[in-house]
Amino acid sequence: MTEKSTITNEMNTMEAVVKVLEESEIEYLFGMPGGYMGELYDAIYDSSVKPILVRHEQIASIMAEIYGRLTGKPGVFTAQGAWTITNGLMGPLEAIQGSSPMLILTDMTDNAPYSHHGSYQVGTGEYGGYDVKKVMEATMKYSTVVHNPAQAVQSVQLAIKHAIEGNRGPAAIVFHSSAINGKVNPNASPSIYNTKKYFVNQYNTQDKNLLSNALVKLKNAHNPFIIAGSGVKVSNGYEELQKIAELLGAPVGTTAQGKSAIKETHPNSVGVIGNWGQEVGNKLLSESDVILVIGSKLAPTDTCNHAKELIDPERQTLIQIDIEPKHTSWTFPIDIPIVGDAKNILSDMITLLSDEVKMDVDTVKKRMDRITNMKDEMNFMYAEEMNSDEKPIKPQRLLKEINDFIDEDTMITLDAGENRVYTVHYFKSKAPGSIILPGSAGGMGYAVPSALATKLVNPNKKVMAIAGDGGFAMTMNGLITAVQYNIPIVTVVMNNSALGWVKNAQGDRLIASEFKETNFAEMAKSMGCLGYKVENPNDIQSTLEKAFSSGKPAVIDVRTTDKESYQKVMYDLATSLED
Image (cartoon, rainbow, N blue to C red; front, side, top):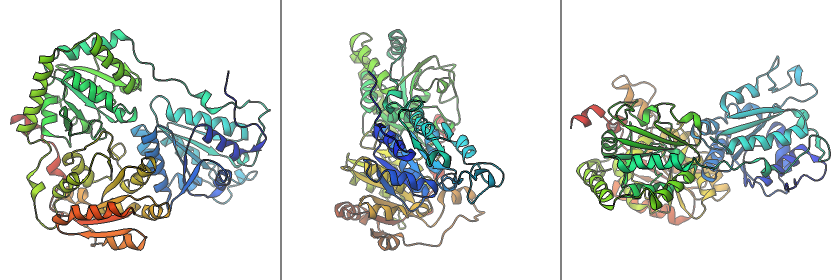
């Protein structure tokens, strides 16, 4: 019997929409009231859905994207139409490329029945106004305009369905004022049903013979290799990835966005592969004969721009697991495509490895010895700069001090720019799923709002944001939100008074890439946070201790050198293979 809808009486449109959010077990509404979306806030006044008020729509959209990424439920972002399509698109852009479920609720501010007359701020796309719907169509997995109350309710239900099923992503509802101003009648047609009944079980895996065939290839390989992408994190398949790697004795290299899909302290981990990867990971990948790709689109940056020395379908057997059929055989032809949820497929493969396609113990040991020896020979995730006492502080030394300080219960969010590249390359994750970064669209200003959402989802974990001074300045108003809602995140700013990536790419022709030195510690204090300025590398760990033990939002402004460059981190494929 179909579960009944909680919409049992006539009610305002937005009250009914909130019922849909409650039926979907959505906890937070990230955004700012404005335009007709103020009606949505009025509707959640007595609801279980909690509003998180921010100081800029960009913060809200990123928080919603991260909430969706971490929970699998759509993070809900709302704002007035004009500012949704201007200030609020960073989160959805990361979501559409990184498969995070989001629900965007916005309006046309069109003042029906005068919508067609181009009234103040009108966003219908008609003469005299901008077009909210057209922008939504260009940036969403699914978007629609709703014109009446029943359509509004059912379209929100379908948008949630689109956001969470298959290849997850952002879905948007653009409300015409005629929909917002009406009432929902549960006894009218079309009928309204409980939201959860629209969701389907998408986790059925492929047939046993296909999985067995893939496992036989991996079993008989001379040098198997596993590439773990962000799809492992999306499916929460951490335990399954680690288990199958252990059973096969296979090295696991992650994409940059997949970093921490397996903890990098694990014997099977060989770090990140591709442009920003470890020498040992790329070396083992280049020498492999069977590759299992899990939840990765195999983007150019993950494969050193499709270098045949790294991945070559003509000399290697490729097996790919992805929930989206279009992703398999997209960038490379795949010998065995397996479509479905990564966690469940890996679970089925583990059962087959244990019961039928059993691995030889000596083979597994031989494979593991090879991984261990190569990691030792190539100084896995080590650099001499990590021991430098120079001032300003080298980013490698800063990351070493952070790595030595944190434990397995610490989650780290990153920004875009050189700080992200340094962390991806030098920082050794200690727990699966502990690194969150904007590696899909890759916009600056991500670290602070990501940390805020991460702490809301994981209140018992320590959460640290690592940002460059450029990215931090873009969204540091998120610290005010941290103070308002008592969200105790610690933010570490790599402050080299420059847009490091841009500056180092310019060579000797520097222009518009350097900043006046700024004291972010003092600015943090003015917003109600704790603020610390660190110039000596030997003070980093003691400052981290003070910041985390305070239980308050804190900013650690670390004066870092501008003499280090992302170019040092880039993997030199030709030189490495010669060696």
